[in-house]
Amino acid sequence: MDSKKIAIIGGGNMGIALARGILKTKWATPERIMIAEPLKDKLESAKAIANGVKGSHSNLEAAQWADVIILSIKPQIIGHVLDEIKPALKDTKLVISVAAGVTTSYIEKKSGRDLPVIRAMPNIAAIVREAATAICPGKYATAEHLAIARHVLESVGIVVDVEEELMDAVTGLSGTGPMYVFQILEGLSDAGVKVGLSRDIANILAIQTLIGSSKLIQETKEHPAKLKDLVTSPGGTAISALHSLERNGLKALLIDAVEVASKRSGELGAQKKE
Image 1: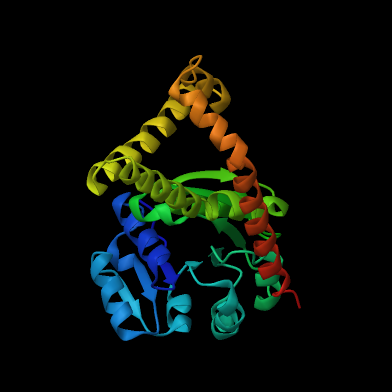
Image 2 (image 1 turned 60 degrees about the vertical axis):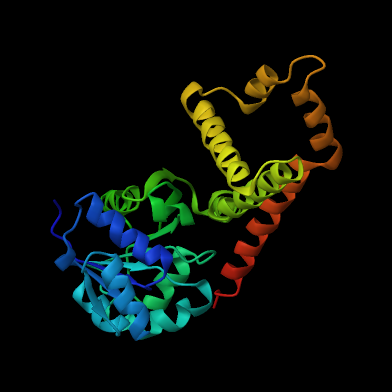
């Protein structure tokens, strides 16, 4: 078990998920985790959900106390938060940022020091420890820093390494990805109701179909197109349904959505360049 103290700045869903994941994997004990959150009710709720970790209303206090600082905040406020905690940003600390679009160079510049920074993009499935996360190092981060970040983020799912220039693409695909899945599931459930199923049964069948199909791809490692061909028998229901999907451009819609979300991530980052 590591001895580092971890401050999570931001008591929202992601911050709480990371705290719970770290505790579940026993990478840190409650007394070595602090959540910083300005809102009293939100902080108390976060501490209760995260099994009694420490709490503070001061971002600076949390950052000064910790060895690892996780910025679990929106990109729109990261500049203000970095100004607030700047006195605590020593080059002996590690900063892990999950703020969409915000570059490691921006955080390094705001700190005014040779600060080790890891940029990460998890998704909301971190709440159930099934997140897909990509990470990349900043200029001053070492292999040891990457290993620490990987340990922290593997507590809520899988982690892959990418070049920073691809982080906006990651944000568009997997960072935003749960929303695409929720939309697809809602559509399937509505379709089930339309053809006569109850809402409960339609939800159960749609959700399990998605879980089972994803697991089949994961375990067989087959290309989705090959598995699709296994289902589409001549003159059958699946090929008829596929014709409708292709005619209405489902794949094109998903490609467009990922592209738009990636572009927006880049725009958020561009707003932070000084």
